[in-house]
Amino acid sequence: MPTKPAPSVSTGKARISAPHHDGSELYLSNAAPELGEKVEFKVRTDIQQNIDTMLIRIYMDGEPRFHELKRGRAQEGEYWWSCKLEIINRQTSYRFLLITGDTFTWLNAGGLSDSDVTSANDFQLIASRENPKWIRSSVFYQIFPDRFATTGKYIDKASDRFVRRDWNDLPKGKDKTTGIELFGGDLNGVRQHLDHLESLGINGIYFTPVFPARSTHRYDASSFDEIDPILGGNKAMAALLKDAQAKGFNLLGDLTTNHCGAGHPWIQKALKDKNSSERSFFYWDSKAEHGYEGWWGLASLPKLNYASKVLRQRMYEAPNSVVKKWLKAPYSMSGWRIDVGNMTGKYHAQDLNLEVTRGIRKALDEVNPNAWLVAENADNFPVDLDGNGWHGTMNYNGFMRSVWGWLKQNPDIKFGFFGLPSPIPNFSGVQMVAGMRSFNAGIPWRSLVSSMTLLDSHDTARFRNVVGGDRNRHLAGMGLLLTYPGVPSIFAGDEIGLQGAWGEDARRTINWDDRTGWDHDFLTQVSKLVAIRRKSHALSDGGMQWVRIENNLIAFIRESKKEKLLVVISRTKAKCSVAELVRERKTTALFGPEISDGEISFSHAGVGIYKLMKAR
Image 1 (cartoon, one colour):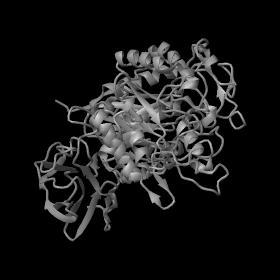
Image 2 (cartoon, one colour):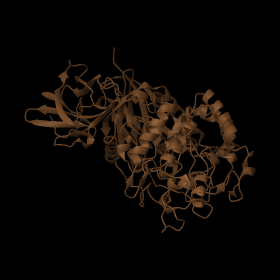
Image 3 (tube, helix red, strand yellow):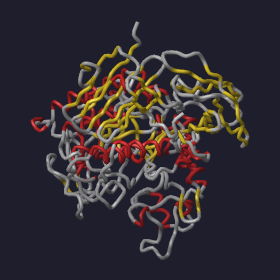
Image 4 (tube, one colour):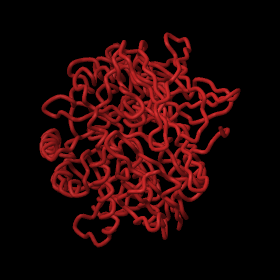
């Protein structure tokens, strides 16, 4: 048996696929079992791999125990190894030991290793209610409310503190107007363009905050109890939700559990009355110019102190708390995206993050157990992705950053690589996949497939700028976004090639009246990719196995019990042999270049998606 085998090794006409296991339905009989239930664990190997014995090393009541897997009959050049075990703990970690003679190889969530390993990258099984099924086949569309579409009906309700812009102006960004530029987007404007989302194939909308605030970014909420009148207020939201839900859209809200705004009644009352219950909602510091701790020291964003039981009641525990209110009728929103979720409840020596995370999850489960809870977790704080808190994270670390480094080309961006004061690094395909695997290995599979995947967002440069305006590389990125495990999210305007060199610049309006500036061909191709994602069982419920990782080309298989797809993505002119990637000889091209003489050829960056079928 070769040491540290590559994910896919081509040896002439023979193809040796690395031993594989993940948390999908092909490899686990139940990824969300009840305690006491028996689960079947499976590993797939190539018949050419010489393995004498395979064991599972599984933690039970904190003790590692070993059980042998039985090897099934050879089927189509593969063996399936399996064993059934009773699940006795809510969280179970495990890995596999492959033994040949006096050598062994570990298989864990990080891949294969011929040296000893710790349990840090073990596979993880969570015995709790499974995550919402509907998100698996969802494609979300992120809308920054002030910039998507306007009816002009509510702009006069705005305070004079805002600087008004004409709809087709560009955001000025890094100056004193940042955050207070008002373009006048509103929720009725969104209603008027639901047909665009419908034609794109979208079935989910993620709104950045819609509560009243002193900024048009609205991450400084002045209230969590109403929709901003500048957006049309509660009436406009109710009307939008009714129309959107009738079309099959799910709507995800954005909530700042870490802080409120300086205009919020909680902080205003706390400043006026030191004996008020609201005083306990915040951290007070006489050394601070404004007297209280703000997020990043900002007076505009007072940080919330969850040592206060009253705050917990108001934010998520009480029947009409902020978290619960908007998930119930008449609004019945489909879940929350939590802003800076990894910072919530953390301040100096105090760390209440897990308590608050689990409290929010409990609140969500009580009012709508089918709602989605996804958090911004910028630095991968995986303990809050253990199945008891957030369903998933915004996958910047395990997807976007890696993809930027691989597909970038003459990037036109400012203010550094996302989260780092440096240019975008130049990653090979091997480095990109290594970054993805590093992230994936630290969390349960169910948390990965419940995380939001994205190429960019309201906080980043546009992906079109990352690739230097190259439509083909942009499409390659979209192809990866829409075939990778997770819940894809497209930032409004990406589908028409909108640009932006940094976060504020990327928050541009969409010109609905003059569409000559739209990249219509790109829009058509993205719509096709979204349709494939929405219809594919392999992409919604399947596992993922890498079969080729090169500098300029990557390939992987997405497979469920119903379907098997091959995805090949290139960042340059390239070609590859299908026989070196998969056993199946019968294929159907769903997207990208046709297979000719057994080869897939790219004349430039692109994506190919192929349905694999057994020869009859």
